Length: 299
Image (tube, rainbow, N blue to C red; front, side, top):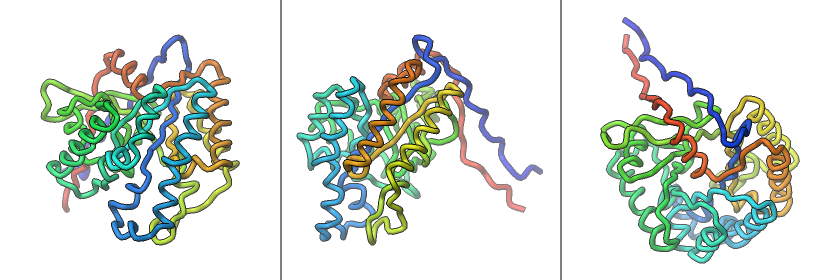
């Protein structure tokens, strides 16, 4: 009797467009107040915390849009439906600037322990809000806190999503098999990782994220530049996640812009929004990978 179920096979290498050696995407999770309200509704009574979060759409997003415009780049902005409803003009500005708007829950709901029916209501409410406010129906999704469920891929496939960006088991995108959706056998998965997230570097909110640190932007720039270099050497996909309420602050935005400049100056790194990367991967006709929940064999 074996003690473990077979694990997945590794994701294969990817060929990138126009002879590029690697890909890079700059992603921004516009969580604003939703990042804390779902887990801690009482923070609505804390103006200091709310102002810390609203800095993102009020100041951070315009500053980031300026960085992207200076370098002629398109990016992906993951927007909770609640953020779109609270800051409709900001989300419309993102769309008007030519960037991708993707789905990030409605109120940044944590999905751990959530049943598929409840998860589906979060997806549908977020879709409705983004369509109504921004006039877009997203094809990309990122689970809040990067915490999808085993049902997420199938729920996304049923709703016509092209890709997800919530998992961490590869350096390159791949086709992720879906279960129970005969007409949509897979969605594209674009992996992420905690080291490529500014939350772990900058987020300190007393009573909410009090275990966080406030690191020097020089450290974050060094980390992300090293990972960009390494992803280029292995032909991977560098997907950096920033939050405008964090990396939209002046010194952090300067550090972010230096990483952007590095990616552009290589000349052989394809810098694109996640939708374009997912469309490229879909065109490759890759065999879907199956990921399954580990099953313990009780002794």
